[in-house]
Image (cartoon, rainbow over all chains, first blue to last red; front, side, top):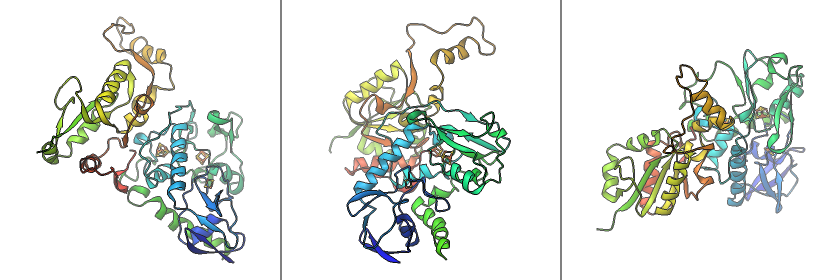
Length: 241
Length: 179
Ligand code: SF4
Ligand code: SF4
Ligand code: FES
């Protein structure tokens, strides 16, 4: 047990907690995409960047320690996060207008939260393969943000180890661990945890597309700051109860 | 009376949906015309842009004529706004981007179904297609982005009324949408 401050507010933490866990339990939202409290932290997207005693750190991997002074909701950090979000948009093929994840997507919701209206960067329009081979699951690599949540879920929860990221830079892409490289031969089941953790529209369950109409979706009315805290605070609390 | 704000609008590689959404401001357009007048726009059919305060661009760039028109707008307008997903990220027209242009043209005009006298159109009057559909901020400086497919009438209205009142345009949460 100890205490840190986030933007001047005193926040208690349990031994072994990361900054984001302490913040989440105390009801303070730190934007994040590759972090999901159900899985081991990955620390790759850098959206959760905060300043700890003047140094930029990833809140999802950095351990809380007595007396830390953390800055989170500042213009400087939110501007950096907006830039990171814009980069994620231009390095994939994100056309929300015809994406079935729209309204339920965390990347989009983070864009809304940060008031991103358009990117300052040029688009890459990378060529990425769609894998529609599986009966129940669609893999559209155009929208993958390399958070490795599916990798972690498949390896650590499902015990199947079906996914990995291959390639470097703009050639980064998700690969499937099966003889043909296709999802249908992988033994992935629609009940697998890995089928339900993608924060964007890259892994989708088929035939669900418009069951929930646009306008009634997760982030249509409520900001991700609110949704994320109400979903994740109980998960974090359960870890030490 | 102070001079009216001059506004120009155009649809490049778009579907006119953003213009339709603009007209969805309904009778608020009367309040708008009290303080603003349209220069070049599909609403007026004026063909070239005079000096303007505000240029609203719908659609991305798919051919040489789009680029030419966009540059005319940038020269004429003090503020230029990318309106809608196509202007901002290429959107549906950009679906052709991973496919080589030659293959796209051949699919439409040579190998497609029911084609007689197959040939790729090459009349010199036709603007040349760009290799890829590109968003407008890659070619000219864009002052504001107004996202949405299309941006709702309320978003367009909020944006315009902020600008007219001399405020920095700022959309509340439900009016920022990328879809
Ligand atoms: S995955 Fe999210 S950000 Fe990407 S196109 Fe779909 S809704 Fe938009
Ligand atoms: S497919 Fe989804 S969960 Fe897997 S790495 Fe890509 S974005 Fe993350
Ligand atoms: S959420 Fe911390 S690096 Fe991605």
